[in-house]
Length: 483
Image 1 (cartoon, one colour):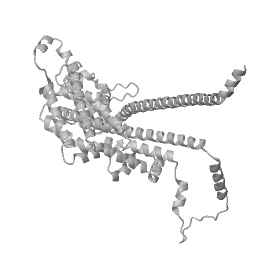
Image 2 (cartoon, one colour):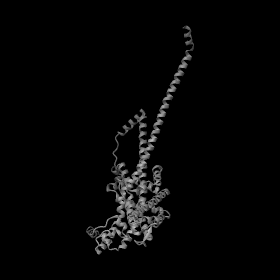
Image 3 (cartoon, one colour):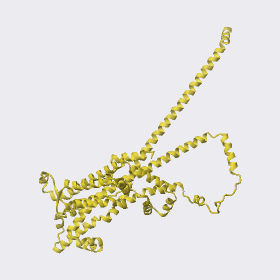
Image 4 (cartoon, one colour):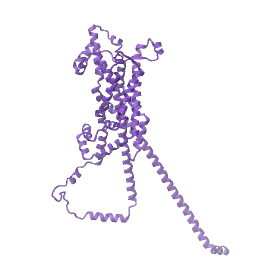
């Protein structure tokens, strides 16, 4: 027992040092494990937050592209009304039916099947049944435009239908392609700015929370002193200048609108600029297309025959020549942009057509955001990549309308050719009358102008919306935060 005590007393210093070292080692290990777990937890939170942000960006991007398609569906009725002013094809068809009705009444023939057996009316008869005399005569008398068309001969009416139907479907393809491109650019620019504003506000809130946690007694004292100095009596400020005039800038501060409302009005004004394309911009290529259609189809009579390939070649020439006006001339860039956006001196005119008076007052007071958005859009439109996307859209529309016209032609000729199916398979190419192409092209325009926002049944818009080049451009605009 005495030996053990002497041993402990003899080595107690070593025991103390060893105990301290052991305690230090244990504490160090515990602290290391604690901070390691904390660091790993923070890294996990950071990675989860980054993953969430990426998914949120992706969801917003997909939703933005879908919103652009919804916007196109909403604008299709507007496009229908605009094109109906110069391309009222239905009234021409009604006038042609009136001509056939007059011919039928003059002969005293009561058999309505005679209209369906004529070669010229094969397409028109398949589309709608022949009207009765009692139902059609009052309508002809009540419609001035239709009465004017009835003064034309049958050949003149078919010629008008041929030229206007082909010109309308080509103008429609260019207008839809440009509108699809403009809508994608506008919505992706707005979505990118909205995301940036959200990210900046979130970062500022986090910074405020961090500063609030680090609030010290010294900062509290300094703020208390500052508050006391603010409560000291001050001289009344006068809004008059040294010469006695009133400072209007001081008064204007009270009349300014909230930043949220100003931002909303500026964004709505930016989106409303598409009015220019639908009402004024398309006129720049409308005259070009109409002239080219006359050069290719003016000399063709309604009874002339043409194969589908020949018709497609003529339409393709019109597209190629029109594209040269857009992409291969020295001033093509100015023409391209002027079709989509109004010049600065015409912006106010466009906004007056689309916005209410209250919104215009807000915009006249603060339009800085609108100018920034228009500048960003101009930068995107001047990019060669945007031109390539537009060419892809126009090429796709050409193939779509030719497929639709071919489908319409085949559907209208099937009843007449059911008996000669064996001969039809032997013939290398079928020829169709120009009149049938005119009716098929008119029906193609109706298919392209479908505006079922609920059913979303416009295959034309769906296919344009799914072009990969358009998605690539949208992703570039959406993710280019340096603009």
